Amino acid sequence: MIQLPHLHQQLETSGARLVAVSKTKSVEEILELYHQGQRIFGENKVQELCDKFQALPKDIEWHLIGHLQTNKVKYIAPFVHLIHSVDSLKLLFEIDKQAEKCERVIPVLLQIHIAAEDTKFGLDRTELVEVLEYYCSPSSPLQHVQICGLMGMATNTEDEQQIHREFETLRELFQFVKSSYLIHRNDFKELSMGMSGDYQIALQHGSTLVRIGSLLFGSRS
Ligand SMILES: *Cc1c(COP(=O)(O)O)cnc(C)c1O
Image (cartoon, rainbow, N blue to C red):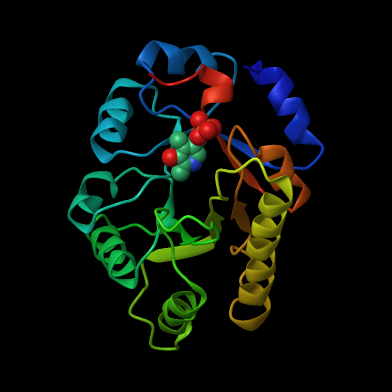
């Protein structure tokens, strides 16, 4: 486990921000970090996110970091601050539709499949290009979503070189998207990568948002 101020100190030099991953943790445990100044919290389930949004102070920025089903977008659309896990064009269209209903623009990240395991969700390069073609077309139907960057999860492995390679792949993809599609968009700036076990590696590859749960809150039962 790590103390919040110590973690913030580690992140400060790199300029990355902390998403405190509070899934399965209680309102009291979240408040403990809130009172130490933490404002960004991440959840991976829609129901839990909605319950905690209701129960906790309204200046918390809630991030959805887990897989999102299209039929659940409507529940989080009014308040979600950033969705990290957009892994299909269909989902992006649904987020756009629900955002329009709420008269807002929802910031999102495109989740990219970088790990060797095929259990982790995410777009491949071809699917990524397809999404960007829609988003960037002059007559884009996607007026209520803002693509702010990319997110990825590395393989759960002891092989640090592999983790380095996967995060570097994501960083290169980020640069490719920026220079080929979104060159004039200053809002395309986030690289969400790094969890408790690999955030220090992710920081070396330019992570701007680390998603850390167990290292802060203790292991989940
Ligand atoms: C749970 C989770 C995390 C945090 O994992 P820890 O290993 O507990 O830090 C990060 N990202 C996603 C998408 C998660 O589901």
